[in-house]
Amino acid sequence: MNRDSQHVLLLNVGHFLDHLTTLIFATVAAVALVKEWGMSYGQIAAYATPGFVAFAVFSWPAGWIADRWSREGMMAVYFAGLGLSCIVTALAQSPVQIAAGLFLLGIFAAIYHPVGLALLVQGRGPKTGMTIAVNGVFGNIGVGSAALVAGYFIDHGGWRYAFVVPGVITVFIGLYYAWFMRAEIAERNAHAVRKDAAAASAGGAQIDRALLMRLSAIIFFTAAVSSFIFQATTFSLPKVLDERLQSILGSATQLGWIAFLVFSVSSLAQLVTGASLDRFGPRNVFVVAALVQTVFFGLMPGLFGWPALIVAFAFMLGAFGQVPITDYLIGRMAKSELRAQVYGARYVLSFAVMSASIPIIAWVYLNWGFDRLFVILSACAAAILLSVTLLPRKMPDEANAPVAQPARA
Image 1 (tube, helix red, strand yellow):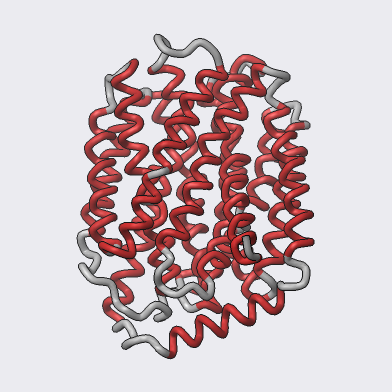
Image 2 (image 1 turned 45 degrees about the vertical axis):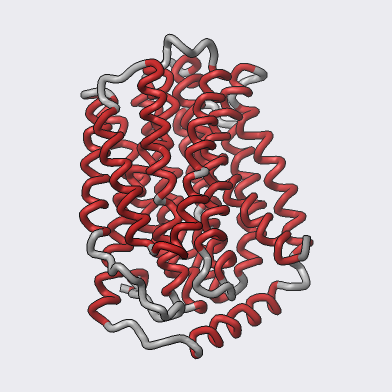
């Protein structure tokens, strides 16, 4: 394995750890803390909000610093800070303290998406669908592993170990990453920018302003709505499965395994998405993903047992399958020297929606239960379906044409 492949592997592992660590609390809250702290799930879930607020707010600053200092340097900071904040969170003795720990975790977790994705696509030209998709699979396996890891440690030692063990591992990976990239930081950034600039100068005509504005509006609208769907499904699914699969489940570990299988198998849809993006274009792929979600979210209310599990698999295939599409569009269109900032702007919006979605999920659950939530998610998926029909059937050939920069607005 050459150094570039090793770097990509480390970036993929970073994506895995990002989603693993930020979603451990979802299972810990649903299974352990409701008993240990004598609070309802809706009350405890609200304390995750500060972490997701930090996840949103600090995404654009992370991209800004990375573009002006070092993307590789920011990744080293990401690994070390994420691991240490997990350990701090494990020390919490009250809901307020765990909210503070999750806020610190969110600050460092915010670094990954703008910086890691910019590193993945820099210098690779427009054919990045599979690269982004494989990275997305690692992230989604992290989503599923969060429930698995948390469930295992709840049954074997306590929920605090679910934060401590990944935290220690992440710190050691950060030390290795800093050593591995120590001699390449300046050279890699300069080379990648030159390579992207050469690709841009050899490209076709620039995108006209009207098309650019339409694409930007679609990208950021779908990013916002799909973020609500992604957060609602990934955060609440352990509790949904806990309620709907009582005839199947026997322990927290079994719940963790079933959630892991749902997330992991569904994440494979991203590989299909990645291969399809470069072949069929983002419009066609996006339509299929949105349609699948619209239909199966609508079927979920009232289902229990095996039918609920089958439908959950189906809508998670659509939810995870659409994840790489907006990142693909940004990576294809954004200028190399601004790419981390554009990704940062996308994730500020996405994570702002995700942080706001936590109290919404808790409120809907407390008042109506999960059936109403799935009706809302079906309507959101339908809105995405309508918006992506406005994408051009054939994307512009220019891989490095400028994209709108709402972060500067």
